Image (cartoon, rainbow, N blue to C red; front, side, top):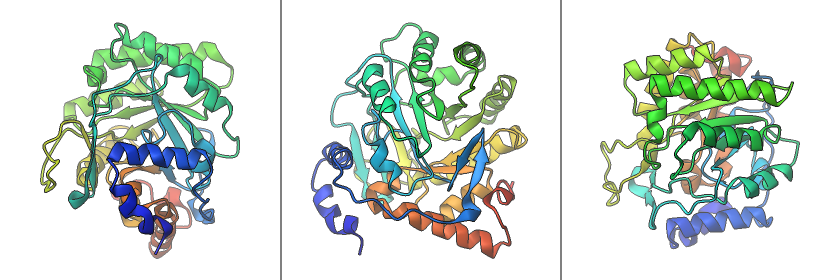
Length: 348
C-alpha cells in the first residue's frame, strides 16, 4: 500500500480546502518524498518546440501560485502547469467552495481564481528549477472592466519565465469569463495576445488556449477556426463542466465546475471534435476525468498529444503518475507503436 493510501483517511478528515492547502505546504517545505522518475523512451515527444519526457502533466488549479514547482516536478510529471493567476490578488468566492464527491470519483470547485496576484506568481516562477517543463496559466480579475488588458498584463509579466503560457477563458467560476470563447470576443482576444507576443522577444514562447467542454458544435467550429487563424500553439481540452448528469454524491447540487471521472466522456468527445476540426494541425492536451493509464491512452487515441491530471490525484496520490505512464507504455507496445506520437488520433 502506498504512503498516500495510508494517510488519506487523515487528509479526508479535513475540509477539502484545508487538505489542499496542507498538501501545498507539505510539497513546498520538502515533506513529500520524490517519486521515481519514469523511464519510458517511447513516451518522449516534441511539441511546440519543447521536449517532453512523458505525456502526463499536472493540470492548472493545483498549485495556483507556483509555490511548489520543484517538488511537483519531482513527482514524475512530464510537465507542470501552475496558476490560474490574475494581475491583482483576489480572495475568490466565499467558502466552502471545494467539495469531494467520493462516490463519483469527482470534485466540484467554485474557487473563482483565488490567488496571490501577479507579483508573487512572477517571483515563484523566477525561482523555479530549469530542469523541467512549466506552464503558466493566466486569467482575468473578477472586477476587471477590460478583459483583454488583464491578459496582456499577465502575458507581459510571465513571458520568458515559463516554458508555455495558457490563456484560461473557460472557468465557470468567474462571471462572464466563458463569453470570451464567443467568435468575435475570441478573435479580438487572440489577435491582441499574439500581436503582443511578437513585440516581447525574438523567442516565441508557446501560447495555448484552454476551453470549456460545455460548448456546442457551432461554438467548437468557431474556436477551431479562430485558433487556426491566429496560429495558437496548442489547445487544452477541457476545463470543468457545469453539467451534473448521473451523480450520486450528496454534494451533486453544489454550484461550480465539476471535474473527475464524470467529466471523462464529455471532455473526450470535445477533444475528438477539436482534433477533427483542426485537422490534427494543432497539438491538443487532453484533460478531464483521467484516473488510469487506460483513460490516458483513450485521450491519446482521441487526439491528445499530452494529457493532464488533477482530481484523480486527490483520491490516488502522486504514485498515479508513474502508474499511468507505465500503462501507456504497455498499451503502445500491445498496439505495435514504437512511439506515442504514432498513436495520437488513431481512433478519430
